[in-house]
View 1 (cartoon, rainbow, N blue to C red):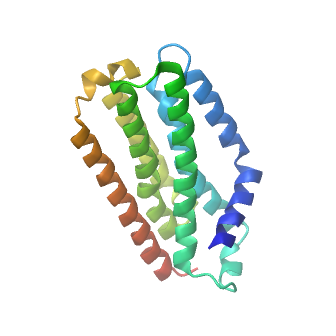
View 2 (cartoon, rainbow, N blue to C red):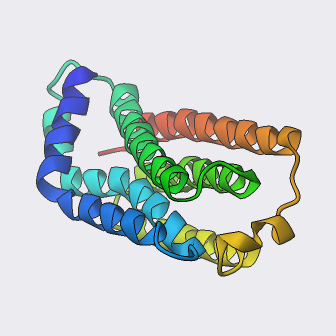
Length: 204
């Protein structure tokens, strides 16, 4: 398992540096003036695409042929991509929340933005990865285009153009926010288990 994560780390270092640059730029811009919701949540969308990008490179290099000769199970292969999703998403969440805290301090809006970021970071890969493991990275692109479009529309509709509108659109108590996070966590775990089952049955 650690070897799979190390392989993906090397792939990210070589092919995903552009993602890191974009995330840093968005973090810097989001701390200037009134924050547009797009600046806050686009890095979350990008982090959700990294596991799919890694799967695409795996397919291009015929990794599945090597995978079958190694002492790794298909469940471990799937778990590696979900772990990468959690690690990358966690890094993005920490950087974004730290930047917003430094720029604006802690308040109701800050906590609501944090909750929504975590929701995006969990739900985007959870909704996309089962399709990618079932159809492959290329055919699965349709699924993640749909999910990204839906997530963008949801962010625009729920949050509005600026984070200062959060109090108007989201009058959620702590219990409701905790419930949303718990539900997103359950969806992520169910997606993980579903992807394992799908990939174990898939003919490569």
